Length: 138
Figure (cartoon, rainbow, N blue to C red):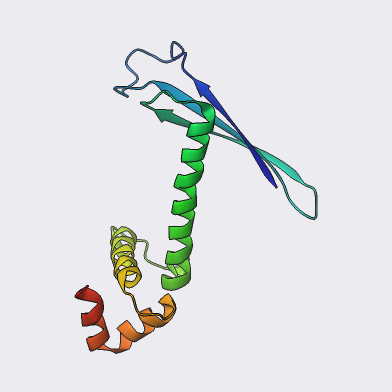
């Protein structure tokens, strides 16, 4: 169970005039209190965001939740389908390049309208040049 509180800070005098964020209008503070079941252990975390907009706290909170929902879903898909977390690619730009290619492949797979699970689409694409062509010629 998690409870989040969003605070919008429009008083920016606490920042230097040369903060490097042109158009900065608000600072946001998200305080999250999480209670884990069944242990009942409670943890608290605080995150800060910057924005060029002035909105109510509930609007910012909804936008941040929507962003992280999409981000977490994408990460989960990349980890489950492409085993990204288990990857040993660490040197240079390998991990970044592989992540970009994986996201492109995931996009092609999601655009495909075959009524089969994504994991089967990946397997078919790995073994069939004709299926790969079908995915690439969306």
